Length: 130
Image 1 (cartoon, rainbow, N blue to C red):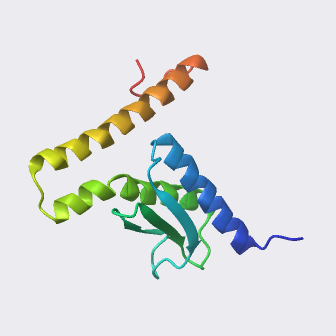
Image 2: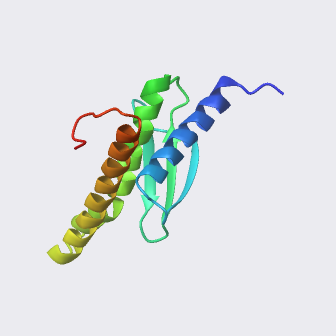
């Protein structure tokens, strides 16, 4: 059975998204993947913060390899900040917004630490790794 390039691209996009979801420790969302991003978008995320359901979409037009990977990262960043964004839109107390902000920062710090440890273990020292 031959997989058409469109199915392959959706599978590739899903794989990239899942990779970033794992990197940032986003374990509290149920995600689905499909075609249907708005015209002019290289990807899109639609979410409901109460149900913790998200749909990540790519357009039916061709999105190339690295652009697909970066689009996945971009949409996962939106998902990562969904709670903060939703709260800020509803103008909730500053304490709740600050709490969500710290969750984001902690996830980013964990990623940077993992990245630095991996680079150090390979004998490569880059960027902010000390």
